[in-house]
Length: 95
Image (tube, rainbow, N blue to C red):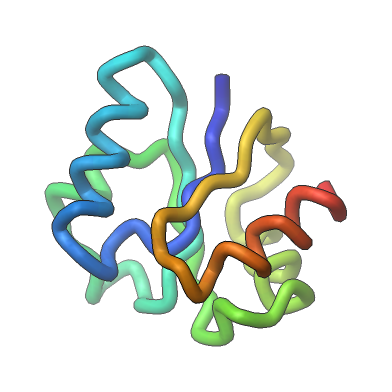
């Protein structure tokens, strides 16, 4: 399973969610608001891909950020940040 996780570095509990996904064998790529160089190195080591998107609430911006990840398919789009629940749902529909 390949999961696209939105905003993996906004709080430490997001890191734990990524760790949980990895512990059950999922591949995890992510889109976050910060550039790669400002994202926690420990988190980046766990991710299979990372893209930056400063406009996380805009679905079209998220779709553009997907291009940074290269050609990939995702089985799930997840987030645990409440403001991103609706953009995640819209992204699921588009994918």
